[in-house]
Length: 452
Ligand code: ADP
Ligand code: ADP
Ligand code: MG
Image 1: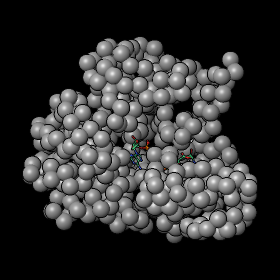
Image 2: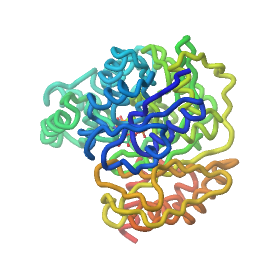
Image 3: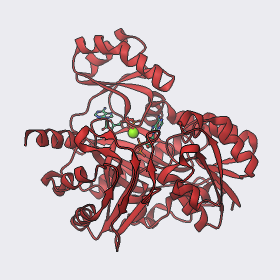
Image 4: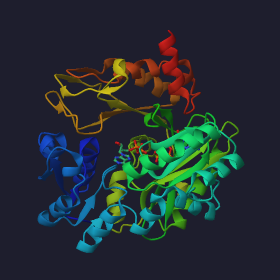
């Protein structure tokens, strides 16, 4: 096992990784920006290094400074968390060159999955169904139009390098495609440094269901079941996730799991990863993309499997073999995660910043709170608005939904606006309570709110 690991991230995920390291008896080194000097991840780390000014590009995304922090502290490995450098092949490569272990998949697997067009090719090669779409990149408006006609409108234009729900545009007809293609290309170039777009069939009201993978360095790859992530905001960002998915039958779960394992194996995947699928109303599923990192919603899988995914990331990177085969993985109970964000639901979810004057989260059994904030913490405008994740576990879905309602009611935050009042209404919606959700659910829920 490593003796000392650097955590190249901030926020709740940095705290989560530090906890896992400490439970493994490993020294944890934090990096932080000047604005984050008083964040909980700095408090709980054994040591911390300031890597720059408040803005992400000056600090957490400052490659030279983060590499330097690993170098001067003598870290043997780096955990990248999610976002930031977690899916940057160049980062993993640079660490490798320094003789420092990147806690994640091999560079080649990051590269194979980092481009949505290439990732779909890999999925096809692994005999995994994909969403119908262009055969690779659509380089010109003319090509895109041809593909769209072949696939049938509506289609999506997707930045191959996109992520976090960004770089996706719905196109309803040929006229729109002509109008949007160049803008989408320019936007993708500006946001991701890569203007390449693919065309994809827009699946109507699908569910987003994803499979968690774990692979060790000895050829063993298993899946840990699925997560239902259909409750997404209008920008395709997940808000509430759960495990298991209410409508997945054992046979579909097995087939989806096996498809995900095949995809992972086909690119030589090791460590934790997630294969995302769309599930349509007929029960057919289609590969969407693979995220080559730990995911925000990993705690719901931890709850139903009893496995610590972050500890396993570290153990796998240190060379430990997985002691489980697929048959050893049992799913027990039901878990739901709600992302708590510093956003004002009454102002179109505009970021809300400032000092948290009261922080009274729920407690007791079946509740987990992953967070880096506390009463007195100042939420700054520089970072992602997610300030906590509330995870509840129940005997079954009804029990978990009920617990989530009660916990959201108890959760009291003052000083800033949060999405908690919005979440309280959302989890009471009859469709949510019944588990009848698709990626169109939140849009409909918001529209209903405006009418009433
Ligand atoms: P998940 O698939 O784990 O739910 P998200 O899409 O919510 O992941 O993204 C995880 C985190 O990483 C979010 O906090 C998001 O802001 C950040 N993120 C995702 N993609 C990018 C990106 N391309 N650049 C910067 N941050 C990103
Ligand atoms: P990102 O890298 O931003 O996470 P994804 O390809 O995973 O991009 O898509 C994000 C979300 O966008 C999905 O969860 C889904 O809600 C929606 N989406 C993506 N592709 C399609 C599609 N072909 N049809 C319908 N919805 C889609
Ligand atoms: Mg995705």
